[in-house]
Length: 278
Image (cartoon, rainbow, N blue to C red; front, top):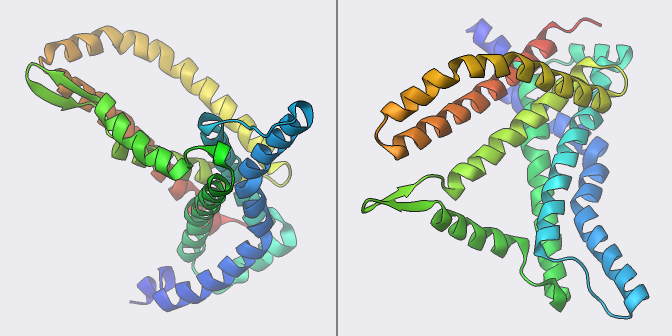
């Protein structure tokens, strides 16, 4: 029981989580707020420029707002971990952090919840609320991102529903796309959390550099392997008479790989928190 108590204690975790959330909020609220409102600010900026140049109010449409919504979401995910936990690599505050009476698992879970779940959720809530408010005030704004996402999901499902020999095949659903994006966001957040926990300076820049190097190395290793396996793989897919099974296999393989990578990043971050020496 003591082992269990040392690894995870719900009451202790609750207390620690609340105090860390307060710290994280103090360190990141301005970043989260500004990033969440940047889409709105950019929209108003473009509208103002148009007004000054042309004398009429107009700004970019739904596509532009949707693109900026996603770009800014990823910008936030890049920035928040080092804003919230950048102190980890600092000798003094990092040393103090190791003395906080909470287990490594509790500390890691708190970091994970704050950077990979709460920060993106706060961004989505504020950005979508600002967008809806904007469309309420500006008649030229058109459809809000929320209604566009809802109707887009429906259209996406219809687009991916392919009738084949009297059967409807759903090759991809908006739900699967949604969870794919969620897993992707979490793995990005964990990657930049690792950067915050390892690099002393220029945490974000160094993490991006490592990501570029890793993707280059992976493609160098995987390309010849894929060439080598390619023919066998194509023959194997060819032997499946059912196109739906082929698509499902490809889809679930890529999902499984993403989830495994995300889990590995999480375990790595946990190990870093557990074994750090200042």
